[in-house]
Image (cartoon, rainbow, N blue to C red; front, side, top):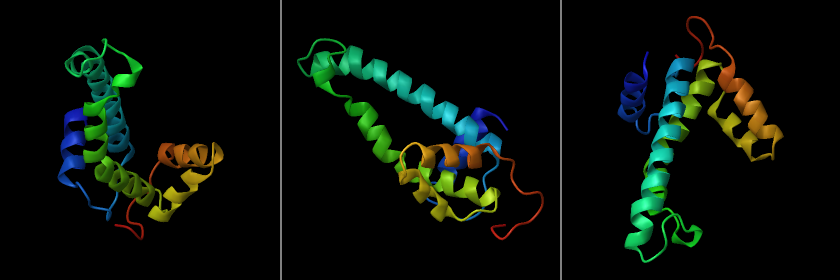
Length: 124
């Protein structure tokens, strides 16, 4: 799997919380999101901020394009995270452990890094 295939797969399953997502699909998507938001941050700071009457990269200008992208990609990100947990034979409810400061995020990171179960599991 490559980045383009992963992005097409995740966007094709925009709000599908069923099934499984392998490690490459998850991590290629994460890399694509890092690249996208880095580009949007530069565009927001260099072009959108001056259009709104601020100095380039002024903190008070905000990042409207990044905000819109975050809202538009919220469901695919949640759905992919749930499918990745399913691949490790865990319920999507494990996402709630991320609400525990620091420890919850580390636990989820470990789950995302672990290999998925071989063959069928209860999620497909």
